[in-house]
Image (cartoon, rainbow, N blue to C red; front, side, top):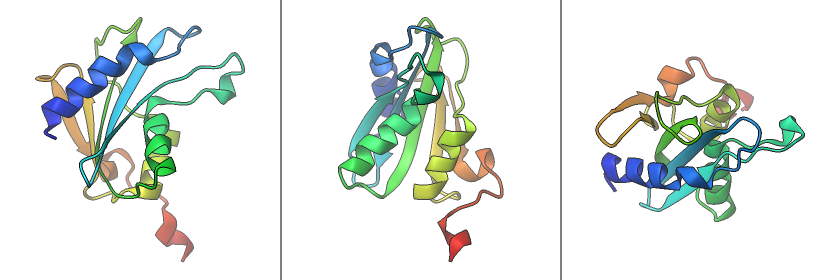
Length: 136
């Protein structure tokens, strides 16, 4: 799947967010190395700490199905489901990515449209990240 298709998947999934409090929709499309794509959305909760971000939602779906190798993730979002700017992952999501992805090669694609997007490596968004190898 190319980047534009992955971006379209994330954008199309944006309405599936459950955001009755912030009204800030976020969608993610996670590309596994075998070509499988998992989508995720942010899911809010009245007890805010129980909220789950779109990125972690996509990762946890993939992990629950046995996937362990990932290539890229697209993230998009905006108030009331309208994408106006790039939507970067929070620190917790960056740390989850660090657990399962190569910082040097895993691509994080922040998208406004299929033609307006920016690509970063995980290492660029989480320099000097703490990972599993630090505990060996």
